[in-house]
Amino acid sequence: VGDSSLCVPIVGPGHTPLGVILLQTDDPARFYRNDDLELTSLVGVVAGQALGYSRAHQVVVKHERIERHLNTARTIQLSMLPRETPQVPGYTFCNHYQAAERVGGDYFFYETLPNGQIVFGIADASGKGLAASMQIVRFAGEVRLRIATSRTLKTALEKLNQFVCSFGDARFITCCIGVLDAAKHQLTLANAGHLYPLWYHAEAREVG
Image (cartoon, rainbow, N blue to C red; front, side):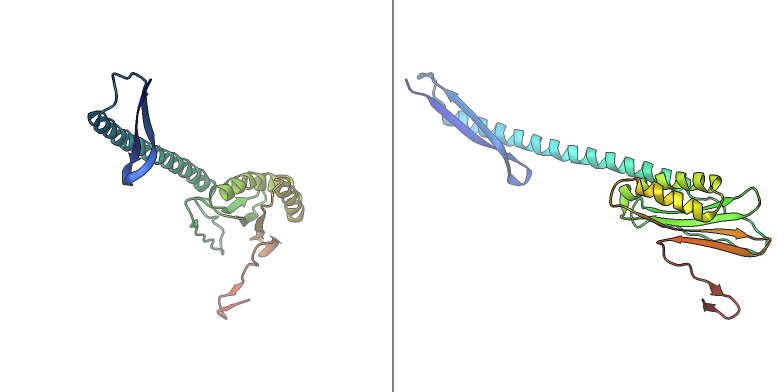
């Protein structure tokens, strides 16, 4: 008993091979002919184009989903940042934020304590992008808690350090926090691995 086989490639966009169509029959009275080959070849081309465009569509859908997640993360991150600067006679506060990517691991804040003192700080999580932004979101909530419940700035930073160490990975966060007593013109700074702040002398026009 003889058989007949017909095999054609499934070719996607750009002549990318995606598979094959294999047809077989063991009916000796019904062998495949050239017309069958041409029809099956056409089916292979159409199927390949459809598969190729389907995969491209999946990539587009995935990309759009990532874009939505990034936009949501950016909205959350920007909502954590101050919208206004403290208004303190004799002092001017300025800030600017620009992430290197859509979202980032940078953070700054202002807080006014019940005694009128101003707490401000800046922090930076290691790495970039979504992972760093998620770390800084966790850190931002803990900063407010520790400042509100700690008796000294040193104690607050010690608690923050323990919190960051509890993440359990190789990531770290640097920060610099200051407390301004405008009535006494006294500034207390605590630095945790961040770049040291610069002191600009306006009259001498020098950075100290």
